[in-house]
Length: 143
Image 1 (cartoon, helix red, strand yellow):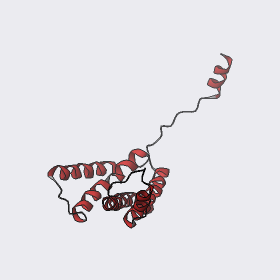
Image 2 (tube, rainbow, N blue to C red):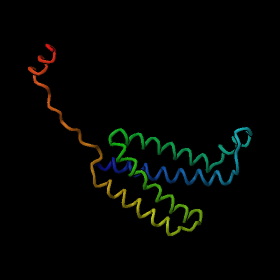
Image 3 (cartoon, rainbow, N blue to C red):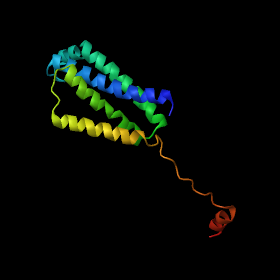
Image 4 (cartoon, rainbow, N blue to C red):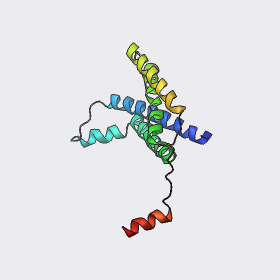
C-alpha cells in the first residue's frame, strides 16, 4: 500500500471519531430535539459544534468512499473501527469520562483485530478460472 492509501485510512479513522465527538458535544448542549418543533431543530443544526461534527462526518464519508474504491469492505471496515478507540480516548480527555476495565478490554480487542486485518491484503485476490477451450465451447453449442 502507498502512503496516500494509509493517509486515506487515517482520515477515515480521525474524521469519524472527531465528527462523532463534536456532534455529541453539540447535541448535549442543545438538549432534546423534536422533529415537531422546527425552530429548535434549526437552532440545533446551527450550533457550531453540530456544524463542525457534520462537516467532519462528511469528510469521513468522502474518505470512506475513497477507501472502498480501492480496498475490500472486509479491510476498510475493521481499519475504520480504530476510530472507536479514539472516541474512547476523546471521552476520557475531552468529556472527562472514566474508562472502565471493560472498555480497556474492548480497546485492546479492537486494536488487536485491526492489527490482524492490517497485515493481510487490502484486496482479496481473485481466483483465475481457466478459459474454456474452443473445442469445449463448440461441444456445448452442438448439444
